Image (cartoon, rainbow, N blue to C red; front, side, top):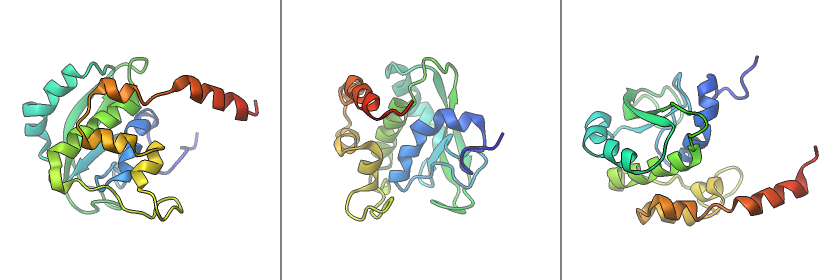
Length: 178
């Protein structure tokens, strides 16, 4: 079976993709140029082991997000963002596919990494996908609400309020062919 994308070489990547693809809107690596593309996220200024032990592990436990574990790692992207720079970061391990909420986990990770990195965290600048005016992160997420949620260090509960699944299902029914 052929992979759906050169950046989704492993089946695990298809499940973590919704969590990590949002990092395309930043200057953090989403693992392209490694064998675990779109399963890992990192940056040269992250020391993953102490950050996880001293901060992130407790935040994950208190988040009420389930079905995954974060593994501190170092990796070396061979192309794209942070190419040939050792990055510290995290690999997402899915422990329960039914409980795992990848979009929320990705936003959660982005919020934590944004505040941990401070001025070393940067949003990618336009252009992105043929759009020369909007911030790439806003295009990926569909609005600027999530970027502001990250910057304001807002709660997971408030993140949930952005989701309007019923409106999405209604729009989907209008355009489905089959």
